[in-house]
Image 1: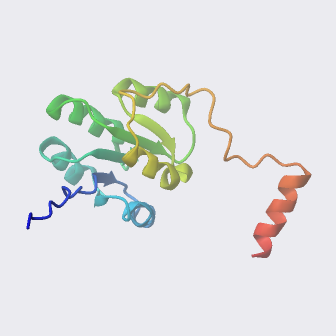
Image 2 (image 1 turned 180 degrees about the horizontal axis):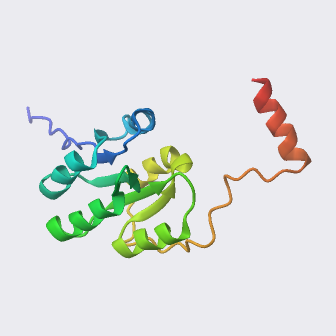
Length: 159
């Protein structure tokens, strides 16, 4: 009787998450833990050592890391181990930061959209660089107003 051949075990992607705020870091870990192995750091110094010497599939970093900048981690990764696969995020849309992140080879997101888009970053084949126009934001998630939207808003508040 021939032996059954098992399919190769696919390991979940390894994500390095750098977020100084413990509450936000915990929320992002919870959102992505079902889809990936999350290694999180709250301080730039510990994340810098991990970026330069570790292996991971995706770097996700807040652009504001107390006195440091998350883009610095993207640049370190590019110079130490090759082009990074990275997502840089901020609390609000900043055109200058979005363009700088794109120049560094990273994707730029808004913090409030990140829990939803993180799954797509983990499981879709991404282009080599972010080609989205940073001037025009994705307006699909913005509350537009109007009668139908107001009705939906009231229904959400009732629950």
